[in-house]
Amino acid sequence: MDIVEGSDFSIHNIPFGIFSNGKGGEKRMASAYGDEVIDLAFLWEQGLFDDFKFDRRIFVNDYLNDFIGLGKAVTSGVRKAIIDFLKTPEHALWQRRDDFMWKMAEVELHLPVSIGDYTDFYSSEAHATNVGKMFRDEANALLPNWKHMPVAYHGRASTIFVSGTNFKRPKGQIKPHGVETPYFSPTRRLDFELEMAAVIGKDSEWQKPVDANEAGDYIFGYALFNDWSARDIQHWEYVPLGPFLGKNFFSSMSPWIVTCEALEPFKVKANVQDPPPLDYLQEDNRFLYDINLKVYFQTREGQKKLISTSNYKNIYWSIGQQIAHHTINGCQLRIGDVLASGTISGEDVGSFGSLLEITWGGKNPIMFEDGSTRTFVEDGDTIIFEGVAGAGKAKIGFGKLINTVLG
Image (cartoon, rainbow, N blue to C red; front, side):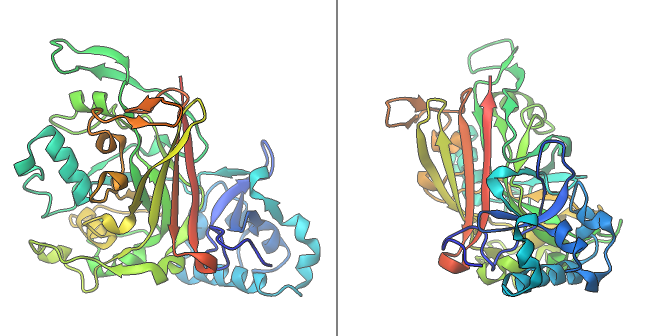
């Protein structure tokens, strides 16, 4: 079962998702290998997972939530069974390969989980600093609370869609500088935000905080995430309660959830925090993941350009700290909830995770080979995210997160 070297989906990955093999076809649980989708429901029907005594609803399901809810011992066991199967070319089921291996380009991939709640953090120091410099002043770019807690807002779960979903330009009230009265208009400053989504894999208990050192038990895996933003709408509305229409119109997520087991080799020690966080945010072994992230901008005319190369390890607050803070008053996390990292920016313009930063508020347009320019996303433009940990045969990829803006 050789695949092309450098594929996002090697035998070291084995992510989970939901697919259907035709318009209106039933949704089924799947994994990815090379450029193909593995129909796990078919393999279950043929007895590959008999050791686990599953109901049919686990594999023939609109979402992964029921599967995830079986716990890490089971989900890890299924992943191992898939890996063992891929390593056994003499298995009788390979004679029926065409019944369970589908070209990824020929099937429909769906949102992998039913998302009950969605929280978006603000965890990149470089991003927070850049925004502070633009909208406050360079000397006091970070707000006083930023290095003391993982700042976040609760987003709109109902408008999170899978990669490949295109959307209409949002509208709202805007009030440009120098204009006395706001007016209703399509946004003129549509932006992407380069993020990662942590998918909750275990319910926490109401009124019981999750210890930062135990937070890893509550994460099933990760996906790419784009928290689309209408900057002009957001700027006028966000005081005093934060974003609303500038954020709630659309967010997107890649279709494959890469498990924590697959990412284990790519853990890196997080930097020392100064000042030290309060006790409930302390971790014995604070870590991040070394995941390279890229953003491509494709104009409606077909001009494509790499505009950002960042890394998940550029965030300041770890997922353990985010969960500890989120649950400190007993807020319940539930299977399928999404905790997004916030925009992931590095220290230079080539690693900034939003157009707001890359163009510095629209002052420095992006130049394309045909002479066209962009400061924000225009109708017909496409934004593409990619994420990869490692390289070569051991590479762990997330696939692509692609969305096009409609008129």
